[in-house]
Length: 195
Image (cartoon, rainbow, N blue to C red; front, side, top):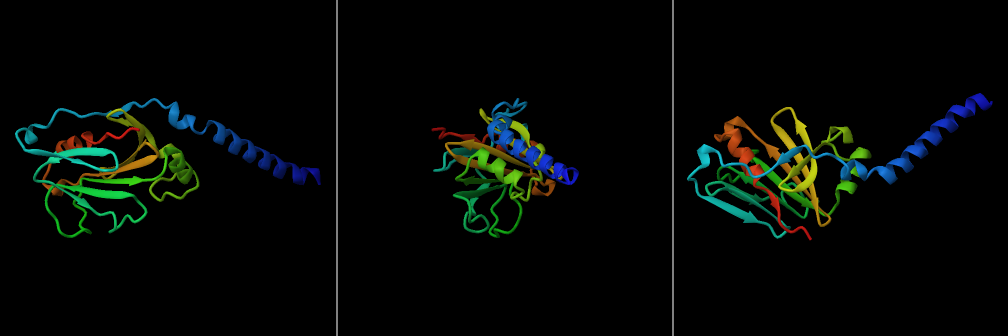
């Protein structure tokens, strides 16, 4: 009888120890990471030199610079009803909100990196299978994580003042812009309300 119960007790103890250990030391996964992937405002690409730029400043504490001929569009209530704010940055004016011509989608939610990590651990985030899929990254001085995908797509997650900034970078060669231009726009993203 003891040999039948012992493996079950051992499994329960290991699971309990793992849960306690992760709750105590789980934040170190975020705090003690070496943020080797650093994105800072880079030199403007040759193709954008002399192009008039504009900067969008959000009431949610971020700003982004892009060519003035591009468009930034509020899609908060179109697809992203659980966010505080969601904007798409696109190379040209497009009137159809379903068209996926955005280079960058910026969403702001009332959550922290810790609560985001908990959602990933519990399998509640459909884009990320495990915490091991996240790569430490820093964008203009703010630490966070990147989840790269194979099709020139990445998600970036940064936190400031209990707000989670999710950046969905999507480059498609059919957008009639270069990847360098798209990456430069991404590199201009800054959290400015770091209270």
